[in-house]
Length: 272
Image 1 (tube, rainbow, N blue to C red):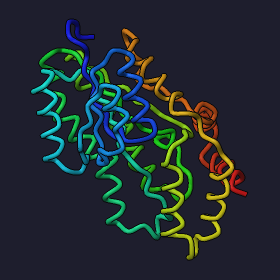
Image 2 (image 1 turned 90 degrees about the vertical axis):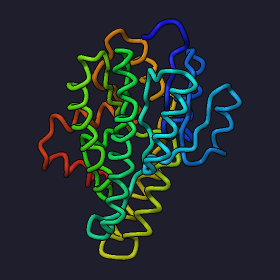
Image 3 (image 1 turned 90 degrees about the horizontal axis):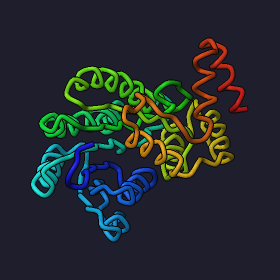
């Protein structure tokens, strides 16, 4: 960790859920925090706690360039980047338009990649940095109706592995966070999208089953994932991956040990 001034963290998707919790916790841990999101009005709690709220859309290159430039101008450094912005484009793959599919990849992968490009030169200059890419257990396993979301997270896992190898010689760590079920707006929005896109066609029955299953589940509090971020920050040599949240461990274990067909059967049985 850099010494002297307080370390500086940039967190995307900070207007709600895990991102907001990350921001508030890191300030308590002694970080100067810049929370970035499209909805600045929803980051008043971060600003009130002494953080900085930035208007930033990860699909807007100019906004990302301006945000990084502002942080460097004001603080001279970025020690931690938490790539948390993202959403789930749900709906049957036959029904989801390729325009929506491209938007999913743009937000969950390409926007993240571009922001990382902008931050890396400043981390390399200081020979230190920690980049946390918030993936999902859905980056290791797939469930019906979430095909494009899973595709974006599977891609993020591979991107993160390559990035880790490239930047390690410069003193930069890349850590993947794989949440399971977490209390947030995410699941409700994803369910509404699935219903909007596939709720009346050939996949209507599947949509109803998925919606019923999601309604019966209660995710872990965001703190469960924030604790993983803090563990990674405090570690002298952080692990390459951390997972937590509802069913994260069991699901990853089963995906590693069951055959594809057996895992498919288990998923579909859970939807009965």
